[in-house]
Structure formats: C-alpha cells, structure tokens
Image 1 (cartoon, rainbow over the protein chains, first blue to last red):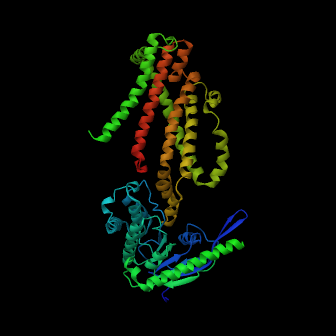
Image 2: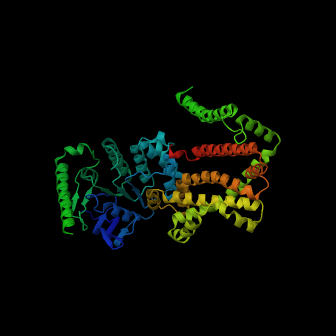
Length: 266
Length: 256
C-alpha cells in the first residue's frame, strides 16, 4: 500500500509466558509495518494478545522471539514514543500540569517550550482552567483527556494506544475520539491503536489489522478508504464504512468460534 | 456559620464530651461510695494532683525525658527503616536476602530485647533510645515495604514508556506513591514508641513517665499512678491528632 520507509517494523514476533510447566502463547508469527504518519489499528477478540503485543512494542515487556525495529526521524525534537493506557495512569500526587511537565522533563523537547506546549494542549482539550487540579478532583473522561495530552505533549514519533477509551461512557468516547484525531492531525505521528471495538478501529484508522483468535499471523488487513478529516459519527451513514464493519465483525465472530473449537480439541 | 462547620463543631464537641461523661460517672460513683476510692481515686482529686505536679515542675521533666527518647529513636531508625523497606520493595534480591531475617526478628516483642540492650549499652539513655529505635525501624521498614509493593503497576509502565531515569523514578514516583504507607509507619512508630519507652523506663531510667509510674507503685502513691496514666493518654491523643493533621496536608491528593 505504501512505498514510504517504515517507521516501525515487526518480524516473526512471539510472546510465550512460561508458568512452571504451563506454556501460554500470547501471540506468534506477528509481522507488521507501520509507516510515518500512519494510523494503524489492531483489532481482535479479547485475550488474543493485542495488549501484550503493544506492551512489547512499548518495551514494557520483552518478546520471546522476533524483532521490533524503529526507524526514527534523526534529529526530531520529540520523544521516541508515548503511550495511552486503558486507565489514565496519571500520578495522583501531581496536578494536571505537573503530570505533563513531569514527562516533558524526561523528553528531548527543549525546556523553554514546555510551558507553551502544556498551555496550548490543555486549552485544545478544554482543560486549561483545570490545570492546577489533582486527578481525584476530575472525572474519568477529563483524566483520560489529560492522559491523551500527556502522550501528545512529548511529540512522540510513535504513539501507542491500548484501548484508551474502553472505560469511558459513550458520549465521552466520541469526544475523546474527536480530540485524538484533532491532535494527531497536527502532529501526524505513527499511531498503533489496539482495540476490540470494530467501529472505533475502522473509524479512526488508515489500516486495520485483524488479530486471530488463536495465536498466529494477522488474518486480515483492511484499508479504510475514508477521507480525512473524518467525522466519526457522520461516518456511520457511509455504506462503505458499514460494509467494512460487517465484514470485520463476521471475521471476528469466525475467529472467536475457531478459538472455541481449538479450546475443545485441546 | 456554614453547614459543614457546624457539623465538624458538633463532632468535636462529642469527641470531648464523651470521655468527660465517663469521668463524671466515675466521680459520682466514687462520691456515692460505690467505688473504692483507694484504688479508684476521684477524677477531680487526680486533676488537682496533676495540677500540683505540673506546678512543681516535676511532671514536665518526665514528659520531656520520654518525648526526647522517642524523638531520638525516630531520628536514628526511621530513615534506615524506610531505606531497607524501599530496597526490599524494589529488588527481588534484597527481598530474598533480607526477607527471612526480617520475618524472624519482626515478631520478637521489642521490649524483650531490653535486657540485652542493658548488657550492651548499660543502664542509661542509650538503652532507652535503642529500644524505641528498634521498634521504629521495623514499623518504618514493614510499612514502606508494603507501600512499595502496592504501587499500581501502571505507574511503573508509565515510567517505562516515558523513559523516566532510575533516580527520578525512585524520588518522584516510588517515594510519593509509597508516602501514605510510610506515613502510616510514622504514626505507628510514635504510638508504639510511647508503649516501648514507658515499659523501658520502668526498669532502666531515672526519669520519664514510665519511671514515674514505677516509683508511684513502689511508694504506693496510687493517685500519682493515675496522674501518669492520664498524661500518657493525653500525650498519645495529641501526638496522633497532630500527625493526622499533618497527613491531611501532605497526602491531600489521596482525595479523602
């Protein structure tokens, strides 16, 4: 699809958890390429290992075999990576702005820009007047907005997202999806976005990779041919969108059944 | 006056009124002859005696002696306890090596070590301070360790993703995250320090609240025994109220 050099290249990746005699394969034979500026989504049934895959890319976990390579922009001002988790993961003893400054100080972003970045991004997500608040004083949706800002403020070349909106209510999820697309449009980094929510993945991504129910290579790659900027709600009236959603839903149902079958055979 | 203020005022009133009611019942029972005042002197008599003790400057010397020993014990042992607790919480090696030693020494009632301390340090200040220090050390250690072990995994994930340097991770993530538990260790240390020092002073000191209790038993001045107990109880409450207030300021982010 893309001749551009890859930003993130994964080959033959596998993760096996060894618990005494028990050997649990989280995933295997995973290969992918993510290009600069690409919004890549990975969907799969729960327990398919997609979160573990993302944690391997982030360097939180070590893959058992295979390689993960990043071809980073030399001399870029921002951090190599950032990640948004299912839970906001803000430090409860720091205010909103102190949480942002904390990760900025660890990043290569020049010190004299920190104040501006924090101010501008908080304003973008409508939380500027809450900058001196502590996480416990904010709602779940607001905290997740801060977590989103925390990821973007270090201007990462690769942004990893692990079902970041899964614990939000429906309204908040749409708000956050809009904000994510807005912030990404400004920075255009490579995003790897993991979700079990098919609609979300197709509405946000340039490409969607479907993870199998039982460990193995991706079972399908789907290109989302919708123009940007996108309206994640308006998109639902698009027949092409609906067709892809149904296709992926069927595929995942099939995968789920396959893993049930294999579970029986084992 | 706003509603929460009146509510808090009412709570404070009950807090003060409830023990005074008990004392009043005691007083009435004593005056009515239902209580043997030789063993249960009238609260008003105890209060008067306390007042006299303070005027004679006798009691204040004992209070300061005990507080000084607790303070020194804290000063010596709290930081080392926190450091060992951090090491054990963060490193599986430290856990493996120190874990069994801590497990075996922690259950020993610290006052049982006093005779040994008296042999080593002699009958004096050092032994008294050391017995408190040993108790404080374990409370600091155990609570810090628990606090570190209970830090949510996501804080470490965030540190990993955003490449937080090890030293900053320790000072800016681990320590603040474990701070509420460490502070609990401090509160327990102060409370237990009071118990330990009173016990130690009964045998190994010539000043202090414990010393006063022991001499009043030896001289059979029961009212002085009660006066000393009253001092300990008020001291304990003041210290714990003070520490609670400090905690509310320092760990406010827990969001009460």
